[in-house]
Length: 504
Image (cartoon, rainbow, N blue to C red; front, side, top):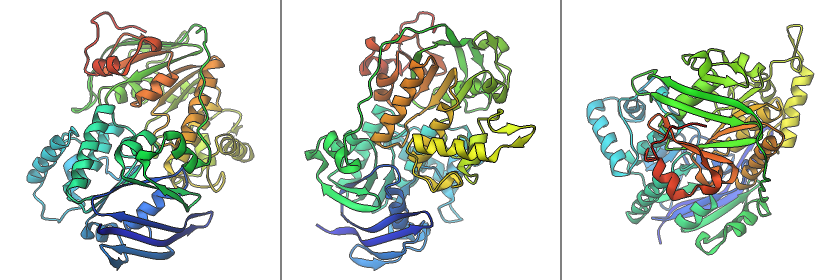
């Protein structure tokens, strides 16, 4: 078999951490090769080295049998290497077509490119509108842009970093068909995912990285999820257990919320009603781009167009209150977008604490209480096992999964009465995902009302007491989790639910 890529003793050191420590990797032509490891194990750094976005401190890279030094992503693309990053590299103010054109020759015809984008998206089942501006897209839709951009290059090696983290089961299966087709045509695929079942179903071989070093190689189809987990984190993931609870009074209510489109590509919200009680988790399922983004903006206070009484926190109408006023009433929020919305990339973890905790705990007489803020950040790092250089580390220096743990921890430690969470374990390894879910369940048991918006059906089934489905800006009637099934929820994702009045 022809070797497409070989890495020999690749090392990369940063001031606070050794990301890669003598890693070796061999990828054959037409092979789907998984790279598995927990958050902060060094996977993303290794992929960025292959793609030329990061330069190694030592080691050799061979491409089609010839030693190369990939100086930049442009050089990688010239070789035939394409990459889809976990954190998207898109400009909000440009359209889908304009973003994709940035990596192409200056004389590219945008009209013809838009047709190619639409054709490629349709061919691979990744629905896209080329003329939409990126700031109007959900995280799932941004993921599709990145994947289509990579596929347009017809690469010899395609690197995918958590490509299915915000895709629905049907979209994942369609993507797998695409990847198998690409592999059969000779394209090699490096596949990073924390979803062990996906790796077992899709990948031909798997290299495990732990603490920046090679920890083993296997045929994932011959392994169980438990054995892969043991190779990755040295133990099986903790089992998340749910206790029966008796919900209390409604802490969050949405009553007949109607919102017209805020821009031409938005989804209008139509007669949305729900309630979440103290000591209850309500899950919202649905395909990305069906109004979840608009509902979250209305709930968080980013969109203040709702009638005051359309959104209630306890007995207080908050539809017209800004985010800070809602937080003062016990509301917490974890957005789906980590960098830029959940955290300011260039600010330290300590400073990011202040974003959502502006109380006497962090501010006194108008002055920041730096020692208390640093102590708070340190408490989050310790409790949630966040791998970081310390409270002064900039948010952008963390791996995606570790930043997610920090943001969830920041909100959990506020002990809110209402917590709205979008994509709680996006890009998080199995051990950390189990921990985050256990923390959310502990909040529920302590009397918090939680609304969880996720495209991970398994996650919603594991967490939720009741389930609802969002489709085309409408919300289904609530469904007891015990009565839900993947088939039923999948059917409801098309908007095909009993036409009774949807209420929470």
